Length: 111
Image 1 (tube, rainbow, N blue to C red):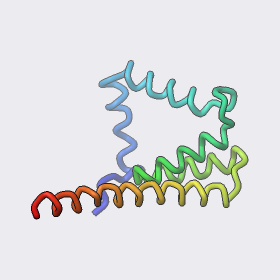
Image 2: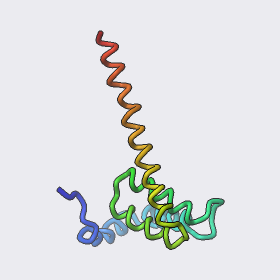
Image 3: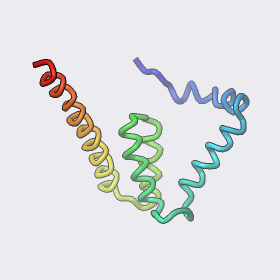
Image 4: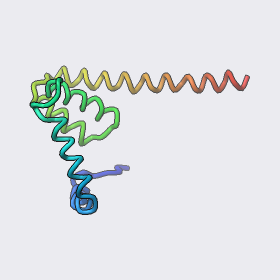
């Protein structure tokens, strides 16, 4: 079951913008600043690769596609994008392992 269809649901951006105009404007200003070619110490390709990794972790298919394309446009290689994906996957898997400690602790506490 798909929870969100970007193509169908994007029409509701108008409702969001009309209902919270200052907040939506602030979000887009922030996003524009973060991904500006001329801001920050990290180059744009690096920031886009970080975005790919975060998008993979949050599992947003639209962000994954958008930031992967933008990373390539900013000069990241296909291998760079793949590596960002695998770094994200390793951290997500690592979180599962470390949360597994809770299961082991629960068993130890019960014995």
